[in-house]
Structure formats: structure tokens, C-alpha cells
Image (cartoon, rainbow, N blue to C red; front, top):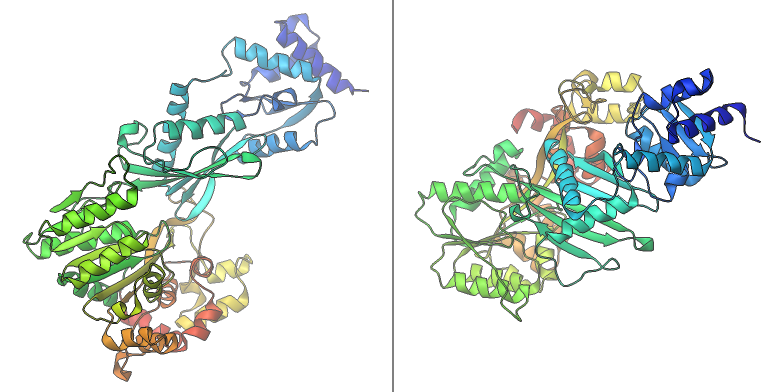
Length: 559
């Protein structure tokens, strides 16, 4: 049997649905009507708290903070999911009462009829909604938008400074429609499509969906169990043309010097590695802009990309347009051969994706051209293994006139200076262990008051982070290092690269040491470094020489 409060709520809802006025109901019913009318119906087909058509028989949420749920469904997974999304969207639920499903559905019908809650949307409206989502993400400088459809709802999240956070939510139907709207105007779909297959695509300015500061968006669609769609949208922002500053990205002085040596040359192969969304394109663009400017625009540079991402002053951007019956790979190979006949000094390939492109890159470098490109690898020295995986014969890698420069970079969040916490404060709040405080303080030679963790977030930052900075490795290969590689003596190669110059080595700086320098300087959070790069314990074990000299390097190096 329903409780008295449920009876009163049902009566009040019936009064609202039938158009009854407060003075036609009892005082208690009137109070419920007043409560319903203090805010809009937030749940529905769309809007701030979209729910599926099936779930609209189970729950209705009002702007007053009242949630009306179907009798016996208070603890059902569907109702709990909607309430959870409401709370995560900062919608205050102050009262939950039960009523009959038919009454809840009648409320939705009435609101749909008077236009207070949206009904079905057409394709144009979906495009407008997608444009709004992209604009919201761009305002936050998000690198990615994640749209994940679940059985009863859709979560939309954005990655800001490397961290995912909620943006909004929709019904499952609306989430699917938004994903479909993205692909309706996307280019470069690839050969696979359909809800059960993987799809990729690109949103360009021609789509009409991009804000002015976004150049393009890469789409990656993945089917999940139950064939529910999942879409990740990677945003590429417009980069200031002509920018040449490398140190400003976070590179150390020694690394800037190494890169300067690389760009002074106009022969050899130069590869920049890092995981997806690690800033490789930005770094490569600045390097090439600096190279062309330093050579007084007296060299010819050709960039082969599709779609075009690099903005290189003075370079010719070669279009890759597959002809009828021609694959994308064949079109790239044709563009490379055409470029070779165009009197180039420097050639840029967006990414070495396959064996044919890797082979072309080596051939170009061996014929006296300078070729710059990117590749996916887990370290600077690991780029050599990646070339081997792409079918490059090891003996070709032993030639020092070919492999001239290797760069590897990652991005780590920078601490907001306004809300970051000292280790002393963090320890008192149990946000860091005493063992970690002791270890980092001992390695860096800094007191706990001069070391910092990410704060709770404030009006000037995004969740305690103010941006991201590069941590990197740079390698100028020489015959000794390359011979160790070809001899398959990886240990000797690594030791030679890490050994100090005064001891007959190269004096390389591993990425973890670079990251620890930034931790010691109070720029980065040790927790994020351990998450993104490696553990402090591994740092001490794998790089004992660097760990011992960290305190000295904090004074010697300038970021």
C-alpha cells in the first residue's frame, strides 16, 4: 500500500497533468504543485538530464529538486543511474517520492505538448548540439571528447590537461544520434564502417562544426559489447604560425642544444616519438619553422600530410588525394616520389605508419635529403626498434649518415600556483605518504615546504592543473651507439648513451630524470609522474647515476 505522502504526490501530479489549479486542490496538494512549478522538468528526451524513452516511465526530475519515481523502482539500476547522473551534473535532489508510471508518463506528455521539454530532434538540431559540445570542450582547452553510450544513458567527458572529467550527459538515443551526426559530415572514413565495426574520420572546417581556434578533429569510433557506440574526438587546435620556441615547451637547455644541432643539418633522418596526444606535431612544427628561418628561407621544404596538420612557413604542402582505384598508401607513395622530383632540401612526412613509408623515408635519407617525421615509440632509443618493426633492415640503421636525430617526448600536467599543496600540507591531509615525502625530498635535496602536489582546484585552474609541459629525451646517434644496436647489444647501447661525457659516454638524459627535475622544481606532481612516466623506485634502480645527481642537476639545468 502506498504511503500518505505518495498518495498526495500522485494527486498533485494528476492535478498538474489535467490542468488543475492549486485552489482546486487541498493545501497539501497545492504545496506539491508549487514545488513542481518552482523549476522546469529537467529529465526528458534531451536537456540537462536526458533519459531514454523506457526510463521516462520510471523517473521524472524537476528543477525544484524533486524526483518522482515509479512505485517499487526506487532502487532499480535504471533509476539509480539517472539519480547518479543528476548528482554528478550538480543537480540537487532534495526529495524523492513514488507515484504511478502512467502518471509520470503523463507529466512528460504534458511538458512535451507545451514545449517545456524537447521532443525528437532532426539532423540539423543534432549538428547544432554537436557544435555546442565541441565549443564547450574548446573553451576548456580539452584535448579529447569521449562520447560513451550505455544501456540507459550517454556520458560525455572531456580530457583537460591529461585528466578526464564530466562535461554533460544525454539519453542513449541522443548520444547515438550525436555520434551519427559527426560521421554524417566527416571525411576520411576509411574502409570499415557500421555499428559492429571500427570507424575513423576527420571533421574539418568544411563541416561547419569547428570553433575558430580548432583546426580539425579526428574521430575514432569503437563498438562495445551490445553494439553500443563509443566515440573519441581528438581536437587539434590552431597553432600560431611561425612559432619557433622549443625551450618554452619544457625542453631542457641541453635538449634544446641537441635539437638545434639536428635542424642545422639538411641531410639524414630525424624522428620524433611519443604516445598519441603528446604534442609531437607542435614540437615538429616549431623545429621546422626555426630551421627554415635560420637558413633565411633559402632551402626548399615539402610537407606530405593528409589531413594537413603542420603550419610551416615557407613549406609546400603536398596534397595526398587517392585516385579512383588507388589506396591511401599508394597515394602517399606517389606523393613521396613526386616530391623527390621537385628539388627538395627537407621533406616532412606526418607519420611513418607502414613499411612502405618507412622504406621511402630511409631511401630519401640515404640519397642526401633531410627527412623529418613522427612515429609511435616508448623511448628515444626505442625508435630504432620501431623502424626495425616497420621492415627497415638493421644494416641500414648502422649508417651514421642516415639516422641523425631521435626525440621522444611526453606531456605532464603543471601545478596551479594558486592552489598547489606543499608536501608538508599534503602529508597532514594524508594526500601523500611519509615514505614518498622522504624519498623525493632526499633525492631532490629540497625540504617538504618546497615540494608540491596538485591542489583541489580553484577558479584559476582546471582540477589543480594549469597546463602541461614536455618531458623528453634527445639522442644524437654516433657510430658507437648504432653499432651496439646492430650488434643487438641493447644494454651496452643504453649504458653508452646514459654514461656521462667525461666518462666517455654520450651524457643522455632519460625522460624520467627530466620529469624528476620538474618535480624538484615544484612544477609537476610526483603522483602524476609515477602515473605517466615511471615509479620513483624504478628511477632509483634503473638510473642510479642520475638519481644521485638530481639535486645538483636542479641547480645546473634550466627548463
